[in-house]
Length: 297
Image (tube, rainbow, N blue to C red; front, side, top):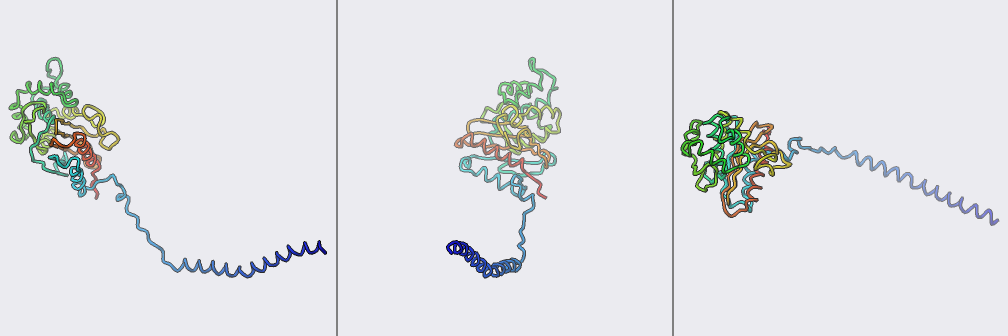
């Protein structure tokens, strides 16, 4: 009897389990049907996904460019600087951005652009200064911003008056800038971003334009721009001339752009209080924004 009782106990438990399952199974099935009905009672939810072009954070539309650049030059670290900026299309002169563009500022070594441009208009590029051909002399002057070479070049041209006379033939108003030397070391030099952009545009179609263009430092590659713009869209695509004096930083040049052809620009900052490094960072940020400029049709 003891043996039979031991077998009957598990059997009774199994029977109870089956009875319980039979009781709750309809409830589970009903719940499943209710969940299905609940899901089918709601309308589909429409999810709007912005077009791909709006998701590209690197693009800058022309309408947004002024706000971006104004924000850069309004940073607390550089807001006290006196900024002059001109940005235009090389091909048609269309202005993308300007800020105090006609104001005369100390351009520092951007003066070398006037000196070398005049020399290339006045002399054959194979002519020699000492034993160095003019084209090499101009390259050393602009790429490395060599002050001694710039002053020697000014003497060869015939002085400040000769520079102005020569460049006036390219349409550069001699009264729109002031030269006290050929290198930009003097704080008596002055020029506006507008005049510098006019000079760069004029030289793009002038005699010996290729020598002038190739004499400029290349962003991230050569000369005074070798250590700037690394790992940005500007690297390798900017030919420019830097300028540095106490309280002065400048950069003018040609930016090759995939959508807008070549952008020509001049950025000058004058002020003794901001750090020179902060001014350079701001200038570089401006140029990076220019490299991201899209037509945004």
